[in-house]
Image (tube, rainbow, N blue to C red; front, side, top):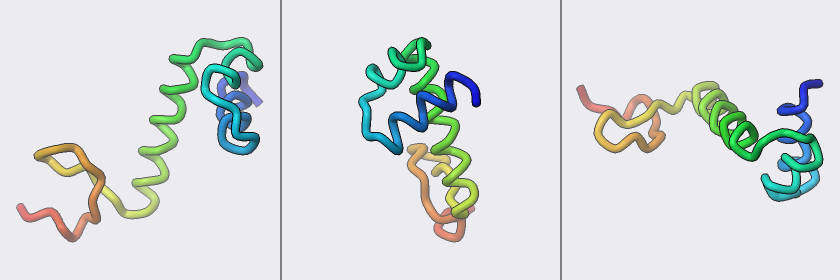
Length: 66
């Protein structure tokens, strides 16, 4: 498991703050925040959500009018 994956696991599973998880995994907080953002996008895509073209909020794909 990579350091970033370990930090994300510590944050999600053990409830550590991003700063604590980053320190424990010996990586930067920015790397953890970036990984969390990528994970959020991946989970949203799997749930059928897409970003609204106007505001960027994640919404159900059927609610966007073209």
